[in-house]
Length: 127
Image 1 (cartoon, rainbow, N blue to C red):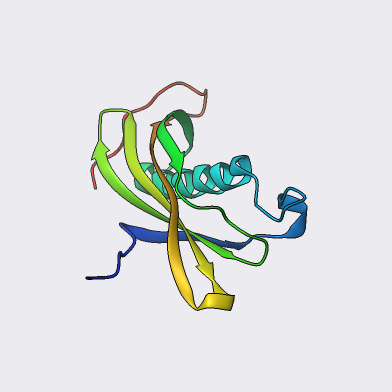
Image 2 (cartoon, rainbow, N blue to C red; image 1 turned 30 degrees about the vertical axis):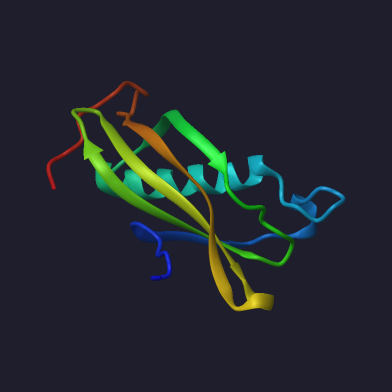
């Protein structure tokens, strides 16, 4: 059996801290989703060469919890570039240092839209 590997490019790494957790030590799902949104914004802004906003997040389900002390790694893979939008597959993986392993926590599809200086959708430039 082969070990699962993240899809895409490592875009963001951060440490899960006690202030991000519930009393049981599980990190809030909203915090994980916020890290994924940051990563998708970083990757989409690089591709769009400018400002982007989150237009939609599709089908996010948590497979495993993130615990205090885990390093959360977020990977992004540009799946599609439309006229003004960029669709990314975003995966969150927890590196559990105390167990020396990395596990997939969740994944979702993020749709980002490129904006001009007035905040209106603009065409994503060619690569």
